[in-house]
Image 1: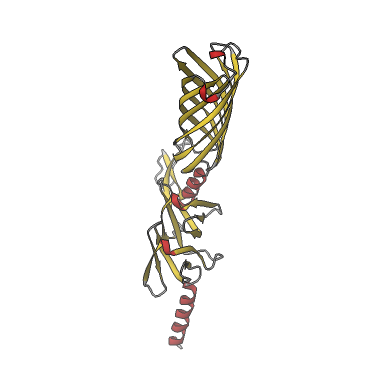
Image 2 (image 1 turned 135 degrees about the horizontal axis):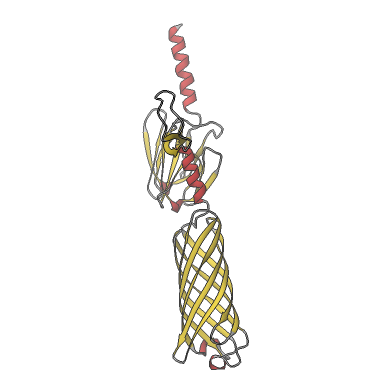
Length: 323
């Protein structure tokens, strides 16, 4: 009877251990089940089977990874380490190679990242009572019962997973690495000549990180009554420029800054045969980062324009979107 109970317990434990296991789908049609140990994009995949053996595969041969039983809370949590240094802990819902990965945190939030943002995926033991110590000052100067001495401060514990959730929540509003496009409209005013204008421009380039964008763009500046302005211009200028910009802050409302350096082509009858001036522009203000790939910015705008026969400054208000 004792041997029978031991055998029954072993069977139950063995059956339970395979619940919620990771499933790796390969391009050759193979399906590998086990515990995902590590994923390195454009590198190796390691998965441990129930007998303890560890199998390795090249990520270029894989299609996706998901969970066999998504309703079961796993004993171990997945860790996504991002290329920008941030770490997200939770439950890896799905990893599609060459596209994206989705992870659900302990508070139920779902986050999706492009695979080029991920440095690696690993796994660690789920520690229910894992805490990080945070000092909180107790200004009431209460007295400890055991020592009868005033408490200068007290310690409270918060779960490390909650800290990870907070970090993931913050990252939701930062500009994401990769291609970025901008479109803006700028009502403005030429100081020396007292002329109003309206610039429409578009900029495209690469978001290196939340704090730095590099690219270039082109626009059209529709000038008001420019009858006696530069070279009897018809009131059209074409700015062509290199652009550098960035953001500071990790909430929805962020500080944004940028500069453009290039030239303006002024047109009388033919845009490409008009006079050319140098242009330097700066703008600083507010960005509302609604998602990692979409934001709205409102920034005061200042430009200097110079050529051999004139110099002017322009002030305005830039309203733009990034996508």
